[in-house]
Amino acid sequence: MSYYDNPGTNPDEAINVANGKVFKVVQLADSSGNIVNPGTETVTGPSSTAYKVLGQSAPVAATATTLYTVPASKSAVSSTLVVCNRGASTFFRVAVQPAGATLSNQHYIVYDGVVNQYESVFLTLEMTLATTDVVTVYATAATLSFSLFGSEVG
Image (cartoon, rainbow, N blue to C red):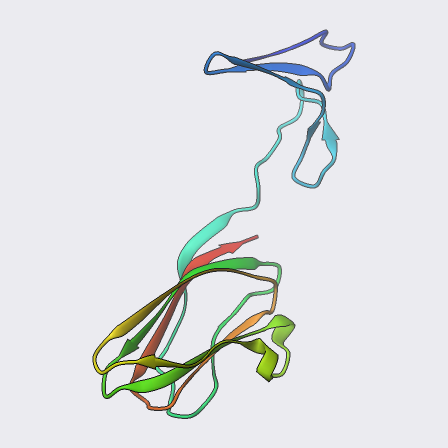
């Protein structure tokens, strides 16, 4: 429940009562940071968030392959990367290229990680990605599948 203290006199002050607690809001702002009148305007929450499979790939052997690129006007949070091995033990690499930069040594977050025969590796990343950032994967054999899960915001 909310009510406004001195409506019309000082429209940006409000008292909000929630679960028996009282909070005084000195100013309210919309998602762009603009001060709004709580008596007449709607304050929206953050941008929409889409939880999804961000990317999947079964790359050919010994080839750096784009797994996911953050779309324009979006950002992303990757929660989990799964590396599934469908064959003999092999190595894998994962890199994050800011703003689509050319792949270079500083971009690797996993380099020659091992996946045993017919096993999967689950990496909990909680990695934040900006617009046009690229997640690249690599496998020494063509028997790996990569799945990146997370959310896009914007």
